[in-house]
Length: 133
Picture 1 (cartoon, rainbow, N blue to C red):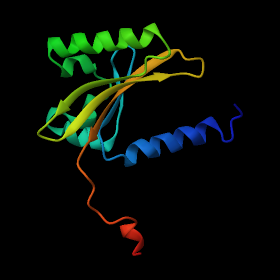
Picture 2 (cartoon, one colour; picture 1 turned 30 degrees about the vertical axis):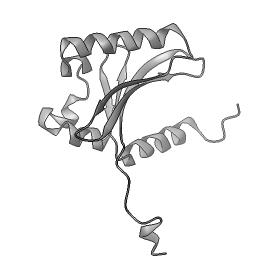
Picture 3 (cartoon, rainbow, N blue to C red; picture 1 turned 90 degrees about the vertical axis):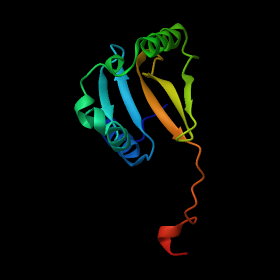
């Protein structure tokens, strides 16, 4: 695959994509250190420190049963480049699902993972509403 733009520009585009996502995204390395939180994640975790959680271990944010599940998922990610996404929970109060998703380099080596929350709530805003059409 030929790289059409520089890695620096691509990284900036990915960062912008995550920053604008309305769903919480938390990125961790293989030691479970939180290396990035988007604004939605920081807001969702404000009572636990928000952005201050960056650099801290994600496992410390979970009870022992959840810690074990996270470790099991990462071990499963490491078993195969085909193992990349796990549905981890559904929160009926917030009508949202949680996922852990593998992050891999170009060779398929596992670099880390991210937790993503996705809401099931229908967006009622008008299509192209901000364009006034």
